[in-house]
Length: 255
Image 1 (cartoon, rainbow, N blue to C red):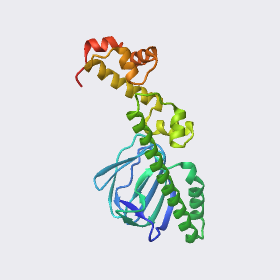
Image 2: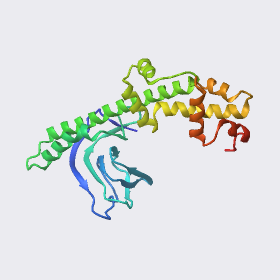
Image 3: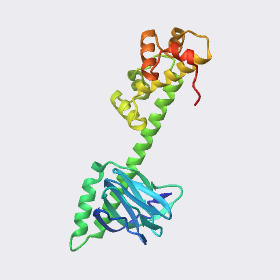
Image 4: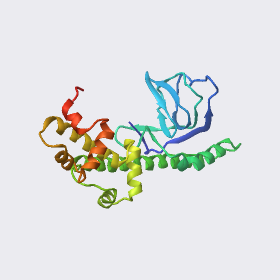
């Protein structure tokens, strides 16, 4: 489900919401849609019986007409919200949930809230701020999708070509991105550096080969991409806590 941009959503109200200790999300069936931009702690509620938990730097769009029920939370959440009227599509628009950069929308939400608090509210400007916030979120989702595809391509290369030397410089040249960006992007997606991921792929292949082939440890080290047996031996022991010969003796343990 997506928030459709045609026709354009219409602004209704906005504010920064700071929960009191022990306060829960209001239980209601609301007639407006609500964009939530999480800032601190976690917001928890049910929406038509489905549990929703939002963390900092996540956005979520509550569609109008759904039944919302508050849930207990560990710490008081803080978020910025915009109530609006909108239409939805199964095919195009802004995903109802995603991540955002607070820096990219901070100035927009501050000006939006300041303008809304004025005695003579200019709804034309407020609608423009809503559209600009949604545009920032949409661009962020496009960038996130592109990073995801790039991370997957890097991982696929490491998994298919683990048997030869692969450097970060080669990845940078092959995919056309700076080395530091590639490393940071991969770690953000998989929680591990490309080098460590490559090592783990090699180690899993080496472990299987030790248990299922007659190749020597030196031959296996070469087969999984190591030109230096001492480096293979060291990485194997660090990964599994035992030497290749011990693994061969014990065989593969049941999963």
